[in-house]
Image 1 (tube, one colour):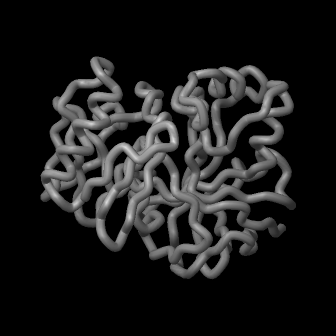
Image 2 (cartoon, rainbow, N blue to C red; image 1 turned 90 degrees about the vertical axis):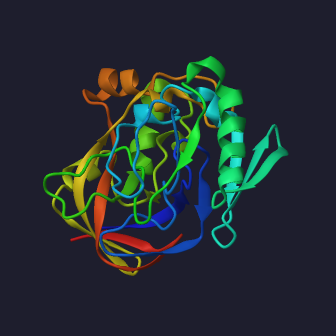
Amino acid sequence: MATAIAAIYRYPVKGLSPERLQRVTLTPGKCLPEDRRFALALASTRFDPKQPEWLPKTHFAMLMRDERLAQLGTRFDSATGELTIARDGTVALRASLGDPAGCRAIGDFVGDLLGDSVARPLRVVAAPGHAFADARRKANASTDQYVSLINLNSIAALAETMGVPVEPLRFRANVYFERGVPAWEELAWIGREVLLGGARLRVVSVITRCAATQVNPATAARDLDIPAALQRHFGHNLMGIYAEVAAGGEIAAGDTLAIR
């Protein structure tokens, strides 16, 4: 069974906007390069960059609670470390994520946007090799960093039952694939291998969906109850799968995805 990669995305700062990629090289045991590399920690969050540990997303600025984050469009320059933040189509801030003053400026800007909904001041956190993923390490996995994949046919099935368009970016996946795979079939791939472009991945888990998917990525409005609709129409609140990279290689939009 073969299908094709429709789109690839990374999310350099947890909770902020996606960046579409045409191609990227995957490394064994790692997520996409720069994916969830940074996060905006609440004032109450304890995170030690010298001994990074997984923390629930409630410790950070996040769409599940902070839908106003979707008002921001961001772009991260991997070469310079600069983050550009736009609001209403206008650049509002450019600051370096590698510079303490730049990190303070970013934390203050986002904190002012969110107001009293979060414990301020927000601070940018990062640690070498660490990714601020929502998922804990899975018992059947060899790593705690994954690539998330979603079948566009499953999103289409959800949209049909809801009677409204459902923007795929609500689900903040890394890889969206299309054609050849019936809706929901991917949920049965646990333990199987995925040949993705020049890489090989192993599926370790389905993805449970939360209130973050209620937020429209274009308008920042909380306008669709996706978890409730999934449960009501399909008897589960799942959309997508997590896979660990077993063998690295380049993947690109249009590449074949095959199950074996």
